[in-house]
Length: 99
Image (cartoon, rainbow, N blue to C red; front, side, top):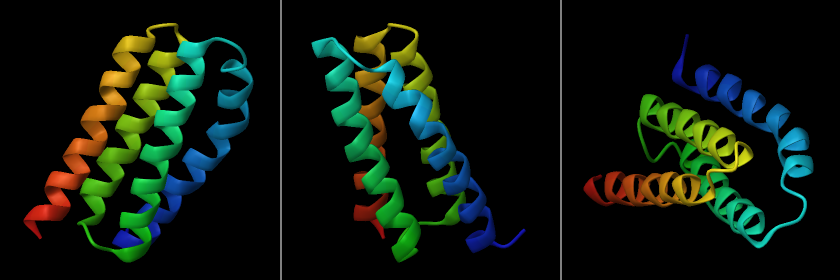
């Protein structure tokens, strides 16, 4: 599977997960923090995917980490989810800085 096609599949999966995610996050301040971090992380992944500024596998791995953070937040482990989101952003920034 080509890198561009693989990224397309990853983003389709991410977009399909958004409606259930937003419904699960209605309410608490911690949930709103998760949602804010999610939007930032998703934006970074989308930017690097569109720009092709990082290897496709790295972008796909970041997308999988985003899904993991969403599940963690949904399960009520907000601090752990925010740490995952923060690590995701740091990892992408570091990888982009090395290129």
